[in-house]
Length: 226
Length: 263
Image 1 (cartoon, chains in turn orange, blue):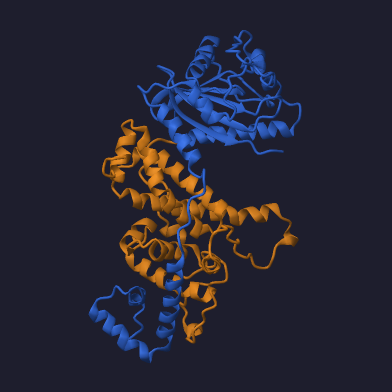
Image 2 (cartoon, helix red, strand yellow; image 1 turned 45 degrees about the vertical axis):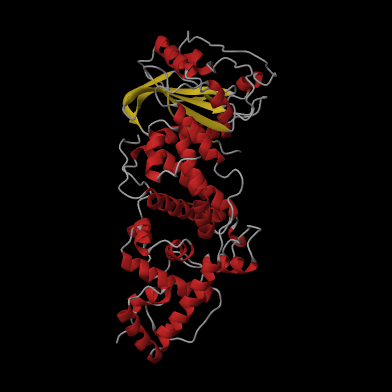
């Protein structure tokens, strides 16, 4: 395309006013970011695929009610993170239904990353990342991997910026511990220590998702579901 | 100084202002806990910065774009045809024989419901299976729900409900089920609704009508057609698809699909 790149919000408007290619342009522009966010959040290529599709389908469904109160990318990230949460939740439930009680290991190991082209270093980091509770993981990935500003992360996740800072710090410590980087410290004396790295997402202090979770629906929904 | 908890994330990120940084620098040598945390956080941050983007595997967003195309087609004033739907919904796009709607149940309730036979072209013999593949859920006539306003979630719920009913009927072999039909149903209205859904061009060759609802969709008077969809050749249906068409000009308003869980 010879034209200068259109803003996301303009592409949204163009799609809504009948330009079919505008949505494809939006997808093409953001799919890499969405997919990689999902891959880091879920640790599995298959889950990243599903979450990417779920996120874009949600965007498609809600696009007509997107009013531009938030930047499109903020909204897209929020929808993606929520798609990952939903998928991780499903994955957590599914094995319990499909297996007999006897087969259950004492502690569910994190799913192994299955993308073939990652270096062994990033595989190790990814493995460790999966042991960090989801709310902390999301903030770390958005800020430390995707280089989003804390203000934007706060808007995406739907928490105050102080909470972002705190999750960032606690999440990093949890990640370091999951990678086996133990430093001499007095964590045992700290009742508000770093989130557990024992693979129990959501168990971290202060990580009450139900109260803090960003609204998956994004823009307002009008009609009733019978 | 108490532990400067709230500054440590930005300290590690290098975004503190000079005064705050100096305060943390002054605190760290005397505090084993904060020093340890900073070292760990720095190590973690360095590890995260090593993570590189991977390319998106081929085909990930294909279904999304296909769905976008389908939705686009429902816009008023946009010319569209069956071909696009066929390409999107049925892998084998050849136009094969479309057998009559599955009106077995309807015959029982509504004696004169007209059987409609649509195009037969280039048939492969597979189409004959559509009837045989019909699930134990049969069409029970037009349901009038004109005071109900569906939205996308509602349409998806209709698809899920139908898939559930098909599974249930499959479990109780031989039994026939039908969705409730309204007493106000008339065969003229039913055939009008069917024709409208058909005219919209959305039905695939192996789609079997199992439910037809007259209602509103996001404020627009609409017919909602619920179909079971299968691979043909006598095989069991594997999806439920729902098409919502505007009552006034039969243009497509929305669609939903739901996989039927296999046995």
